[in-house]
Amino acid sequence: MKTFHLKIVTPYGPCFDGQVQSLTLRTIDGDVGIQADHLDLVTALGMGQATVITEDGPKYAACIGGLLSVTKTMVSVVATTFEWAEDIDTDRAQASYDRAQKVLGNKESSDMELKLAQARLKRALVRQSVAGNH
Image (cartoon, rainbow, N blue to C red; front, side, top):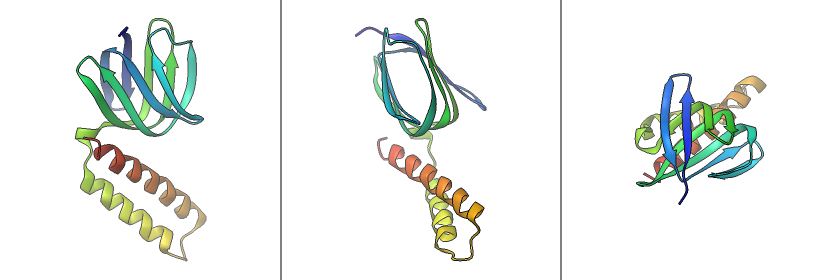
């Protein structure tokens, strides 16, 4: 299968730089799959699982927010958060989920607290789901 160059970075540094066969990830408009010779594209990333297929097989990650850029020579992912499945701390994700549930169940939580808890809950669910693929 034909390959293309993929570079993935976060504010904490590079996560991946190499040749891949395909990339699938969640954008704000839904999932998108990228293969070699894809049309140029720039889009905002949503919150979900990323799948990177290399010659060694699939690798899974939690990808949360950022930007996807596809050109003829490079595919770049600049993610707010990008965690490989094997690096996800499932205990931490569960603790975040539990904290979010507590806030969401509190009738005295402010609108801002509820919005932050909903986002925390979604991030925790993505991490737990991706970690389950490892």
